[in-house]
Amino acid sequence: MANIQIIRSDGLARIQGTAPKQAFRDAQRSYKQAELKVDNTSSFHFDLAGFRIELNFAGPALHDFILPAINHLSVEANQRADLTIFLWDFDSTRVGIPNTLFESENFDDELIESPRILNLMDEEPNVGLYWSSDPEMIPYFERGAPLRAIFHWWMKAKGMQIVHAGAVGLERKGVLLVGGGGSGKSTTSLACINAGLDYLGDDNCLVVVNPAPKAFSLYSTLKLNWDNVPNFNNLPAPLDNSSGVEMEKALFFLDEYRPQRMARELDLKAILIPKVTNKTESRVMPASLVDGLKSLGPSTIVQMPSIEQNSLREISTIVKSLPVRYLELGSDLAGVANTVAEFIQQAK
Amino acid sequence: MHDQYTVPPKVIYEEISGEVVVINLDTGSYYSIGDSGFDIWVKLIRSASTSQIANNLANNYGDKFDKIQKQIESFVAELVEEGLVILKTEIEKDASKAYRDRVPENGYPTSTGKQGEFRKPILEKYSDMEDLLLLDPIHDVEEAGWPAKLENQSSSENS
Image (tube, rainbow over all chains, first blue to last red):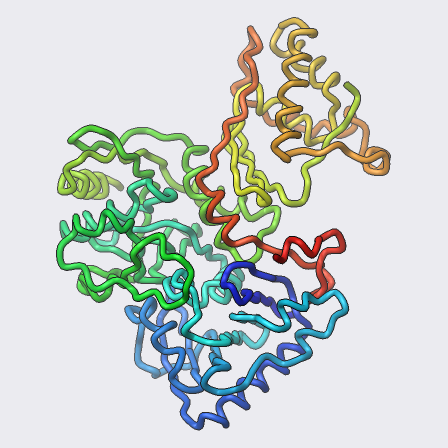
């Protein structure tokens, strides 16, 4: 069976589960048809946590919607891929999703008429498929985290977990920054980058626990509240929103901002939970494991394409592998970065 | 008093360091339960009735049975209202082992294990993820494969 996720036409509801192998093979044939129709294919290679990922596009229509968030991981196409993903869209190729994916009396008629995005992955041949009805309608949050469903499924099989966290570091040592909206996570990330710390992600990164906790860069995306944007100079232009779904935050690709500060991996030394205070100075304070799980778990869970009863356990394993601390944020952003830098430098 | 409860499919939880974090995927709210609430939770989801739990905790805490039972019932009512536990059906009760048979070999996980006065159990609720989850409702499918939907999924969920 293959993993499958379909995002509905309004860009909101997701249907996910498994598809028979035959349906997957039919979808692969659809991609081939798309290739023949456009007669213009392109291939890109990326290094994701040491694995070689190959993206093959039927036509260029999806490039601007998929590539920017992972551009910082691009490498020469000089070795065989561990995972190959084929991407096409209906708008430019006029090739849709095969009907075998819809053959069920329980099927939602509304979805038949209006699927927007399809993610499919079959682990056995290490192949993923991505289809969009119209790239212009891909929601902004999908553009900030493209192919997340496929990466989640494939990386999970490799013992890695995509988490909703940022990571900053110095000299290969780093910390996870965790917390939901309004926690100050993204502001902390930016303050650290501006102060010269390395950075491998803000919204999502890959974490592995064995043999030692490590984080790997996944997306260069950073999301910032609109009213916070003026506090930072020289940010690149935020993403244009053409999907129609309200952009609650400004979205940036930080490899356009400080490419020299982007790291591929960091040895993790702690989980820091940013906490806004009304003080000037910042400081690191003790936190409990349950504080760590509350800060990392729910926001990571909601982004998973498939949620199982043990999904929280996998995140709990990450939390238990690292010291958990509160990062009390003072109003002085340079002080925030210094506090983080000192903490990392002192970590063993 | 003798009712048994179970965790519904759309609720996931994880016990960590004497507390439990619970997420209701239907509402987007998440919760943490510690101290006496944790002691109640771990027994409740392992098929103990509220009277059995009250008996056990009255012994552990050395406190009055009636007082503890009232607080347990109030706490369980709160868990039910938040959708975190539901009553077991008669079929589920028959299928599950008796309370005493389900006591784990090493005993139940405990909170701090403090003796003394039983403190009122507290359910801490967080709603900051609701917008994210309600914006992006997740529809599960049968294990048999997509595109079959769960039999009890109503068409209104897709609107």
